[in-house]
Length: 373
Image (tube, rainbow, N blue to C red):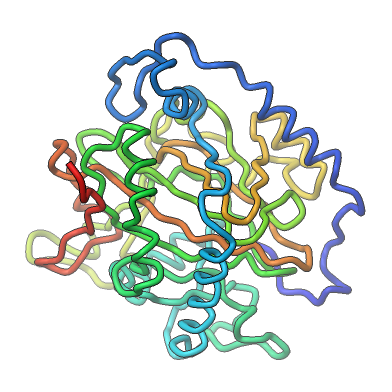
């Protein structure tokens, strides 16, 4: 993860990243057209690509970019609302493990925190590891509002601004276009990617954390609230990787939770553990490919990753098995995003896995966004 640093001591970015940006744009534009007959990633059923070009590109390459999906006013409203929520409700140092990591210490950080598990249908706040000390208190000189890594994971449940977007007709229409028929929302997150200290997000697949049975159905909706560029940590995707299968899972540990009713659990064991599924494992799983940082990031291009630059209001949509990551933000520009994760509901014969970290309290169900027939 990126280490906290002042602007003068932060690792420097190349003065001109236009070649990196141009290379990414060229690779995206040169992706081959889908074949005449496409196959749904979600169901495996076939359809004529000409009948649904957006779905055909999504199923072929593993992502769809909806330009200008939200207006500047909608983006500004979400940014303003999150600023108010964090200012009023986040108190650094009041929780034992209020940090978020995606590096080699992820299992330790998220796998031993009730505050993390209890965020399923609430709005909890998580700091950049480099911005706080071991007690979760801000380090000297760090501004509170510039120390946050993320807020989650139930913004769509408890807040009117984020719920209005999450259940809007345009979300429903887009999801239906891509093939989802009974979509429900298990998770929402606001990611800050702070200037100069915003850490990398290592290579991962969302279905590792949001697993459904008997088939994967996770869909990520990544909304840029600021311009997201190669300079401030835009998303990098690996086109076609969504067809490779799930590489690992982040499971509730039976050794901690015990059997039915919680009997026999050992609270000294971690709450969550990773289970490797791929054999052999991908070399950069939970890490970054060698040569990823600093730019020109030849290691990413060599392994098939492509940067997807977005304007504020653009929405990047991808299935839960797509390999993706983002690099640190050592620039002076923010890169906030609001992210939804949908899955198919039981109406389509899909069930949420009981071993996922995210579990709602008994009697609570995921919010459905299907309002029309």
